[in-house]
Image 1 (cartoon, rainbow, N blue to C red):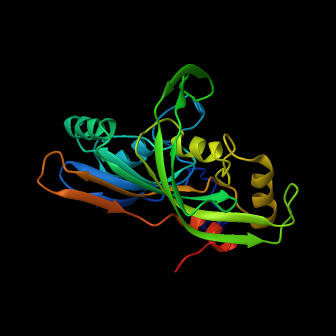
Image 2: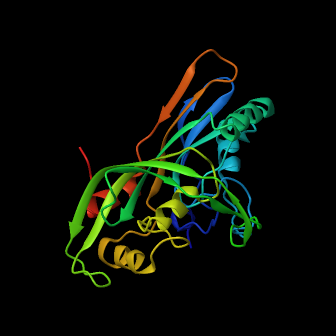
Length: 256
């Protein structure tokens, strides 16, 4: 093989491609917020001991400094995730979350035509294990307000019905219980599409096979809080990621 053939031959380097940068939604001298994609863990967890990608590490490497998570969102949920840029800042914002002083807004696609608005006031059992499988007898108060944004009906038979109905709903959790929104919507029989833990298996299968939807359709779209160190109100918003928007189009729930 000539020298020219060698330099033009396919590379055998198996170094993984660099991670795409996380979308930064907000940053000041104490805080940073990213748009966490669906499927990314916030930090190392018993949920998947083999996973090597975490939001904390990716963001740390991206901005070149340590970050301190102020809260968490579920792995399959996408949307706004907040970090302190120092330990004091992370702790201060965590306290605001614990004291229910952070206003949170989510969007979800659910099975059925949910009422136009309402409040879900239903206590939830605590989890005894870290991966959220074993429930304890102890319950915690949990409150979620919701507002319907759009509805659709598609010609796919499901269970005993000739069609499939979906709703796009905006949600405002006032407490921060584990899987609160997912469990509350399942409790009132409007489970989130793509929820393999608390949702409807038949609806999820229909969504995969007929609509090419392979994720939990839940996204954190807005947070608002009083800055712990500055005299200002912080409001951070983001639209759902592309996979969520594509699902809205396929379910004919896309709003203008």
